Image 1 (spheres, helix red, strand yellow):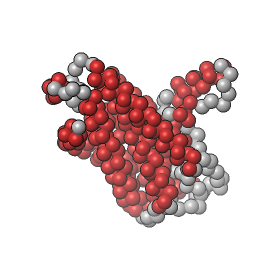
Image 2 (cartoon, rainbow, N blue to C red):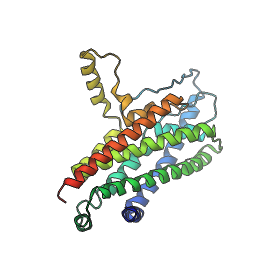
Image 3 (cartoon, helix red, strand yellow):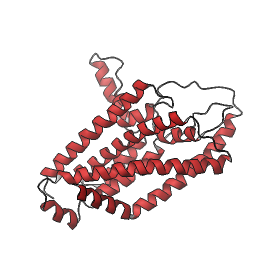
Length: 277
């Protein structure tokens, strides 16, 4: 198993898309940070203050908005919250997850090595392990890039509460990893890169809330009131996790990430093990 993980890690770091998406993440981070300067200047002219609740509303589309109140200094934590809450960084990560998961599905490599294995499901587990390394490295890389972008664009560097930042970033890392596993499972099961890529992008754009709302209405007609499906999804938890999450909010987010991650990995592993490659 360790050898499979090493092969997937080697293949991951050798992919051109690994560097291309990394560069795109840098450009995107500097772009959103520069736009935040404009937003911050506009906020200075406003007198209304938005109170922040424990759970933020989820809107259709990608919404990267600073949580900073008028008169407050924009911190690195504010920028990280805006980009992770809006699933802007997740967009880059899911694209790579699909490319990585689909890169060897139709190649002679997977057919040769898969035919020699007793349990082909181990190949899915090794992909999952490689994606975990990618998720952690990408989050650390984004933290460095965001810090640099903050210093360049705002000409000032304020990190914000480090303890809160680490807690929020850790929980979001688990949620992002679960989302990557979902995209990997869709790619492995469908074996269609175009469909998987479209699915990954649409999920990050919150298009699924249309489906969630429909299900909520059906459940309400069955007599169950105040049911909100988005609270039990990975992307929903990514958006609903507040900047100052309660212990209960963190526990629910972590539990959602773990359950979805285990479920989709086990299901895709089972499908891949039984499928003729």
